[in-house]
Length: 279
View 1: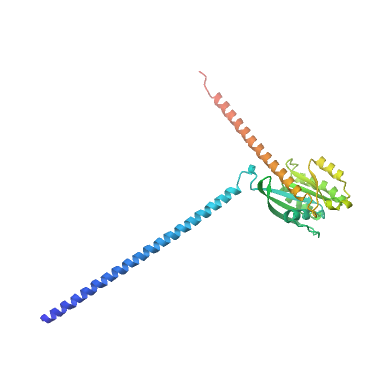
View 2: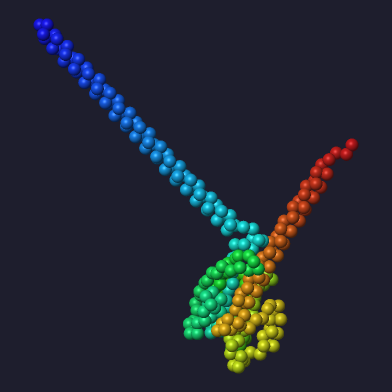
């Protein structure tokens, strides 16, 4: 009997030691798991922090870009000037546009329906963009020109110095522009005699074109899309005129707003005076 008790006591001691060891092992495993969990959480937090920083940087960049894109129009920076090329078919509207855009001269004539271009330029030291719409000169497209003209701020009216009919048709193009723009005095037009490199084939006298431009109150420039003569001058002079008229409109709007505010203030003061009781 005593031997049995002693045997059970030894077994119990052995089990107790093993249980303690097992408990210690399990505690160690649990601690290790907790440490791993903390490390993973810290890594996740760090990743979230990096992601947040990246997002904040992107937001800052986007905000800066938006601010740059919405600068005060009076500064000129970020402005877009909309130019429309008009004139009868074959006078070189597309050739002038492509020469200005890409410094290329295209000799083959392909009738244009409507092509649009955008170019970033520096105008009087300020960056801006010019949108150029090269319209069709054929009579078949006269019905859709109104839609194009409505969006235009400046117009380059082109004829060929070798084609008197194209010069005569500039009158019709100008009348259509003024009709669509409701005879807006802010419409800028430049009369352009193209193909100046073919002076030996000239059929439109220089004086006649100058007189028409003087009658219209607009500049006249002779150009050559082939040699690039005065190509940049035409576009930059027109953009400069469009910009000038935009600034004039902004200033006029600001002055009208100030006058209106002053008039409202005077009316309020007058009403207040009438309501006072003199003692």
